[in-house]
Image (tube, rainbow, N blue to C red):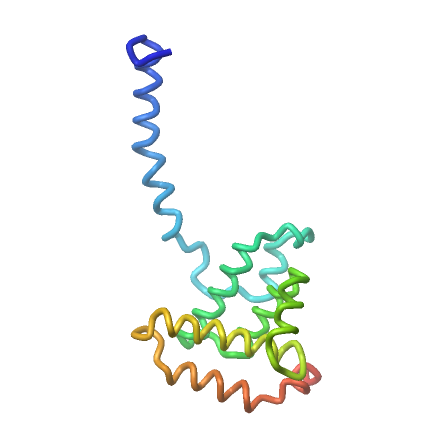
Length: 155
């Protein structure tokens, strides 16, 4: 079929019209926020079906990035951020092994807190004008002055 046939012309017009409406919608998907407030751990468990092994790596990264941004903008404290990172890490056995192997600490919570700090430092390197060094220092100070080993025993 070529554009010189009637069917070809109709098909070409349909693709152009469809593209006119569909492409802008696809481009705008990145800017749509489905949730304006941070998602709680319990809400995430409801949103993600029991087959969490199928939960995609990109979605795990997005959840960590959302948690980190909430921390950096003062919308969430370090403990809540660590809880979210830890929950996401536990969805993937390799992620948890990586954290346990590469970050210092007496327990998974402390190691995860240091992972949060490393993410924050990386974001600061990428955008120093948006993330002040004092924010990084505050996170570091809180990590070093929290009794991580006893933190989960009081819950």
